[in-house]
Image (cartoon, rainbow, N blue to C red; front, side):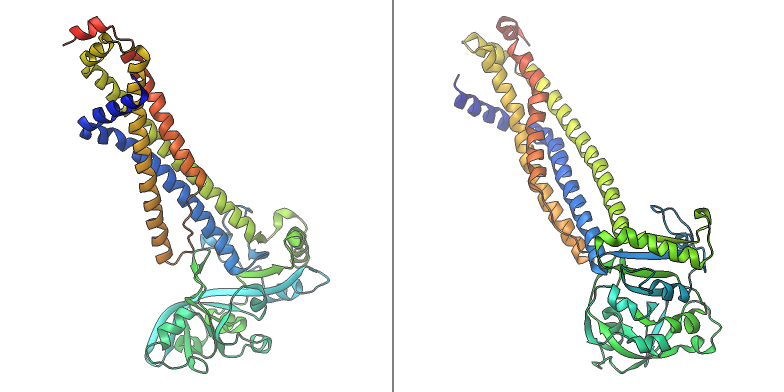
Length: 427
């Protein structure tokens, strides 16, 4: 029997059992689609992490109060209030002779509160910082200017709005936010009587939309002078973080050593066991997140591989049942001259056809679902790239064909070895 006749017979046999063929392919479809979706989601997650870093800026270090493991969460994440960093630490780190590769250093404290303009109030976050923030973080101004060094150092009653806050307060009225006076009230308790009624601040600028960075909405916040946030809103005198921008990637490690040395001297620390601060490289944090997404992708891919295995076992079972059902047919074909190789090729081709079609459908389903998921992530505000790698498609095709060959081999071999006389007697 020629190869073309074998293909025609294979297609005819599969179409004669449409329901069984579809159910047999289902496991392959799920497994192949799962592999493509998981690889696509993993690539999208990595693009998200890298995008988060690039949004804030490159070569960034953060100094946080309290000692913690470099790869673990900061002490503040557990709700512990640590007051070891102060404004004088920021000034010391700005000394070029001490930290020569630091091009920008800024102190920060954060809080939540409400912002009121006329009769409209919105809840938001505030970042109290100094003029060094402007040189360290990537952003552009939509309107107005960022607070000047003089305004930040003197604690002037000025504020810069994120785009979301500006839109919430002023979009309905059509009033230009610049020059308007808003009142900011902190959710945290403060000894300031003025803070209890709201601190009046004049709007000097609005930052262009930036989206999320490290899973925090950068547009739903306001920026105020550090002393306003510390003394009038939070009633504190310490810092929650010091941000540092390094001039070049190759100088990051040296800057970490310089920062550590300066702060240990200032805090009179002699032993590493007594260190009361943590210096973190944001690129390292991004690398850690990437490692986590890789491990998760590998785990989920193994789950999809199990689905492929289950699909392969399903093909094995169905092909064995098919051989049993068509025993008389096999005997008749061999009686009229079909060779063992012809019978084996036919059943192997049937198994390969099932897995190949299932693999193709799985690729289409995987690409479509991956696209829909990436569109959903973009709609939710994440910088999520739609990535379908060529190797994932090649892998899916190869695995689906290989599954058909491996799990169809035994039934095909069994069918080819049937004795024609015994097969014709089979009931």
